[in-house]
Image (tube, rainbow, N blue to C red):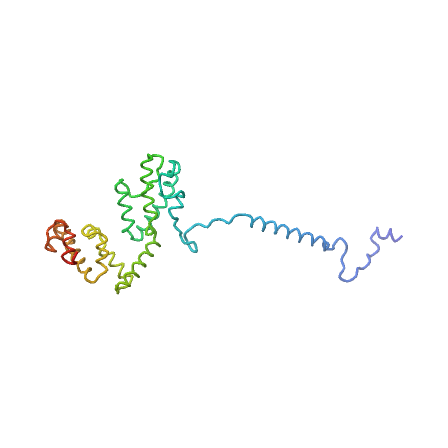
Length: 267
């Protein structure tokens, strides 16, 4: 009878204890939840292991926290500086890679106004070829042309002052050296002296080494200023630099630089 009543819905279900739920409403078992958690942990561990096994990505140079590190010449020519060590194919690879790096350095120096020293020498070499950049067009070059470009690139990229950091280091070293020899100005004042007197006209007249030596001394700087003024006047009047300097220092034009230096500095 009770079974029939149950089927007809006439018997109320027994009350469950407080906090209990019907079987159909119960939460997944603790074991099932634990299995899911373990599966998740295994998956996370596998991902971590996979990530750790991958080689770290190379960070690009330049930008915040990634200072630019210029490559030494050996990075382009690993067999050594001797050009005869390389096949044509190897020379092509070296010149192609190195020319791009060299042109970027030229651009940085030019943008910073550092157009003396190695920049000037490199540009002078390139201008004899009718260009202002190093060439990476290796397929159109003969081996002789490849070798010549290799040597130009080696000369430029091997110079520490082909980079901005190298120039800063050089200026600091020069300044410290001059301070030890009695120079009393600041590093900024020394830079101004270089900009003022290391001109192509004065270097052509006396040589860069002589100009460099004279600008460091108290009696050398007035001499350079006098020579510079004479050259500037010659530019305005169209007079030759040689004639202007000869008249200014009252000497003949033959062996002009040597005579001027001997007259004013004893040799």
